[in-house]
Length: 454
Image: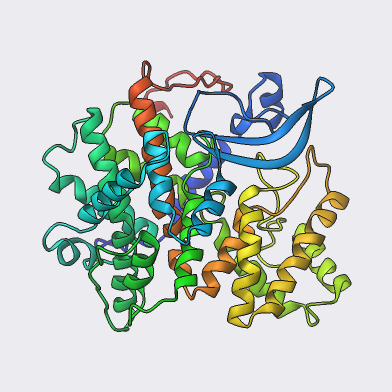
């Protein structure tokens, strides 16, 4: 091997090790049934195994009818409040709602006007970074993967915190508020650093204390810091809808698991970020956008139902796009008849499409939303209904807001940090044991052989 290694090379020796690992690590799928293992912590019907209790949020996808569980229109509640009512209320009063949503999740009730003003003031106060942090951390070795850049920045922030390891409730609350305020800066500055590395101009705007989280994101991102009132409101709704989604989603469950070990807030949030960046979780809306770009390039007549249906069938048959056999943005682990977040998005998407002159694309999305479940139902045995999920429309919204693809998943994180914070605090308050599920060993016993005899 070379004396000066190239750390990006996958050498023949590495390939050999990987193949050995593969050949000795394949578990017989029948063993999962034999030992009654709930793969993915879900039973054969897709129902999640109850692993904990929470008062932060509730997902409703079924109701009892004549003693039987039947699918119903999806509902999402934050601390017992219907998220659709939460969005509707802030919009009717023509104000931004993410800050109020974060307070609700963290504290457990809606704030009074004075409490909300104080909470906004705290977020504004914390919406800054340590001296020279942008120069010393963010601008050094920028990454095209902004989620990795965000995670690195969060870990580095621990070095600036004299009480990083203190997991007392007041200190963790302070850390959670700071990270909620800082995530937009860390994400946007991380993107600007990578953008600059690629030969573009560098823009590092300072946050403005009088602006909401959504307004600041747009002002920090755009060279001229300009945005319309409606654009900011749409982004604010995106943040509200993504702020929380029950204790069982992958990144929030990760938050509970890692918190139960007694680790610090920064490590906990980085673990949640690592989970969220996966394409099966927070990265799904990117896949939706990429799939639609391929669809638009492949299908000649976007209003021809038969042609669109054939493309969707090709997706399932692994003949189109990434050949993964998936129609991205369709279906959800819990919801069946509808995802309430997608329902809220739909109305905003139509209005935004009209304002942006992209109604042709909107009609295509609507067509795929209608045909997708039909194609899936005709092709596969499914245990519950299939409908568009939140990722189906959120990527299109970001696209129309001229937000770069690299920030789609970080935007999810900027919102979900509020939910992670609420769940971390809940776990700390109620924590009694470290979370440790059991695994059954199904491999063969081996006898140790001395090296010279192998």
